[in-house]
Length: 428
Picture 1 (cartoon, rainbow, N blue to C red):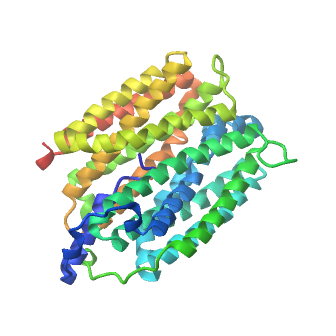
Picture 2: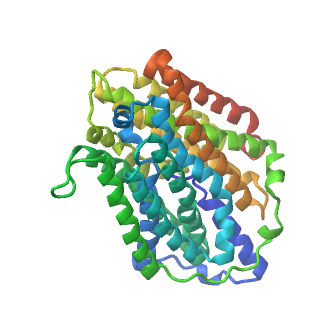
Picture 3: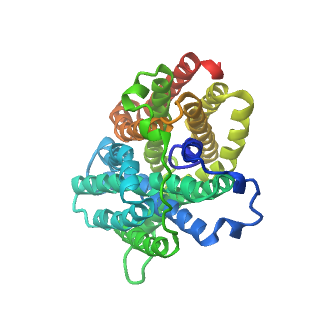
């Protein structure tokens, strides 16, 4: 599962529109690549490292939340802001990153963004209190779309169309791996000494991640080929943001995206408090290992795409949400194996939901307006993650993890109703 909305098909279609408008021939795209090296191996490694480096950072505080609650003497909702601040930053800056890349160059934005990301990442390690930590996390979020969002556009513009899907799948795998490694790395750093003669500390984890961002920036600078000039695109005259917001089907899809990331962030943020308490009593390192269930997404997401192509986005979303509800309810069973199976079902269901929503946008948005429709979707998607970092914590006092599960189930049921009633036309 990508750690960002699965919008590669939208970007690919926009690229196709640009090629058609410029009158370019696609004859050279007919032959399939014969090997990994035909894809320009160094460039593929570079964009994959961009995905890893970005998502190393986004959810890195999740396994540390019980530790932060104790260190900063704060509530669960308060420490949950270390997650929501980053996703809020992403939501606010995502719609503008493509605009910037079109004017100064995609490669330049990607390289400088990953260099710049190292600054708030290392700054996070210097935070003297929770407020400073939240501020640094917000700045991390502001920078990240300049990496992952622009990299998607870079891939669709710089590789031939017949190679885009393969390169994108490699890149998406990098984002999944980066999301897992970031969570795992910070949890291990808080429990075990990663640097000789330095005591275990969550701060060490962020310093190391910031250093890796700088290393990745050097690799990107050396290995990422320069941009090719953008062809004239009908997208420049396509429908704008207000037009999309007046489309009932797209508006419903934005609501679905909001709910999808709300479900994922709420589950994996607040389950850490549940698993840190009796009867589980997991350490930060053990909590970080819970996120290994994300790696199932490397298998589930491609299979989900096949399923969606057979049954349609609406049916696939309703079925995957039902599986996610079963999964989150299974976490209430007080046994580690049950929680792990439940989290796997929940995350896998969310991954398929995300693919279904992205597929629906591709069909519903008009040609020339798919990029702006996708940008709005990214904004709503990460706003859902921002709300999920705080609101479940407010309910914790009334029923702890059970109250959070109830909220998550309600949100999932609302998602099913929205898709079943509003997704129409070709998806009916």
